[in-house]
Length: 383
Image (cartoon, rainbow, N blue to C red):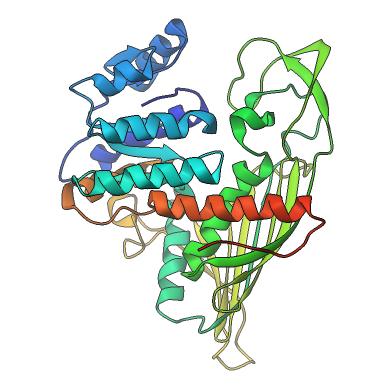
């Protein structure tokens, strides 16, 4: 693994746990973790169960005991590390968004396609696909329970940047993050909208805003989403704080999206609703063991949204966990992700979500930025 902070800890939990929960064809061994700060990466290795630590990702890739490289770094290094790892014969899991630009993502897809011909796997880490309720929603839609889709609504609201005294972390710098709430949060809801609908966005119309344009410089390294500010000096925020956009799916269904890190009181509020001719589905990440389902073919006198508690062994991923009614949490999405990566490698199946899926999301994000820069003009998404 390259990276040891927020996502590094979450991915470590997934790798460490998957083989103890699921009956896997092979068991993952946590060979080595990499970070630039020797003391911090050594501490992360000890905390999360990694056998060794490196301070140079090139040395990590060169290790004979490393067969899969998990990339949990900021987006500006994804392409370089992933392409090098694939060319070195390794499987790759890369955090989302796949890259900071479409050109980088296209290069990563070319490397992934060449590696696939050699039997390697390249997967992008859209972990929310691995929430059992979301996976189950995809099954219901694919089975035709909603009929022809009409609307997709997706929002992802957080509030960790509401305070203008919050420091200028790497997530607020375009050269590191690529974009702001759009890439951080919008990438997730774009992927989920396309995944659930089973079709792609063809065009978007967008607005974006940076509400706080200068923030205190960071004193030392950031931790998770935050850090300690040095209030004596300010630096420029070069990414968006919020982005709103509408879109059209290939079938003609309409979609709307909102991504912000400035919604006071909203901690991790990812919400989805899909309406079709035969019914509707709704999901709220803050109640992630539940799915709301409305069957519009039932008599009006008894119809309405009903709560499905997604904890039965018949539901996705739940066969290996607890008795019905015993809910899972955020960290379990990374356990499920690790399970799926391992099975994909062992069974030789097509990787999902693939680097090509990540590229498609990157193209949507680029179209959103272009539209917002041109006063919301409708902008096509290349297929």
